[in-house]
Length: 253
Ligand SMILES: C[S@@+](CC[C@H](N)C(=O)[O-])C[C@H]1O[C@@H](n2cnc3c(N)ncnc32)[C@H](O)[C@@H]1O
Image (cartoon, rainbow, N blue to C red):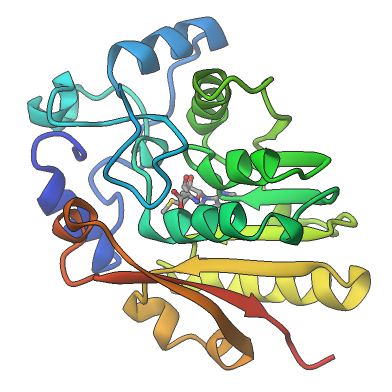
């Protein structure tokens, strides 16, 4: 890319926090969900290996997809973060599948769900109600497609910016690779604090150790629950990242 013309270069930009400069002003065409679903199916490939969760299959960009090598300006939508399975989300999903008791029977929100892998892992681990939230409407369609790929009924999806409103009573909030931008991280921190203090929500963060995360004030309220070494191909796509951790957030109350 973007994912396309040179995925490695793009991912490198993302890692340095220059995320989406080239593409973020594009707005999604007004198309039906069926059209977007068709576009996703035509321009992604089902992948079920080369991640920390081989038991979850996902439609992602791969070198065999047209836009891997296509000119980025031909991509008709905003940046397709939903077409990448990010290292933070991988660790989170692995952790949930390894520890199903964490979300069993609970009401779970995957905030910034992208492809929806963490939400899918929560559902497969026995959560009673899982909502996938992403401000990118394309991600909402990608989640539905990925549910289908994994034999699940489509999960409820929300495209509102939930971190600007009063938090609902979630048992568990999941955030995979969401601390890539300082402004977003500040807003997330404030909102997560409300989730915990008002509703005693458990918050789990999947993070591969990006600089913006390591230097953020939230870091001192986190306890590491698990660490996973990333598969070779994921390391290769994410320069300098070799592992990804799951953190529990417990602010002063
Ligand atoms: C790096 S991707 C991570 C996707 C997924 N969690 C994973 O780990 O594979 C970040 C995602 O957060 C979404 N996002 C950014 N700001 C958001 C917000 N305020 N609320 C919900 N989603 C947001 C983006 O659209 C993108 O899909």
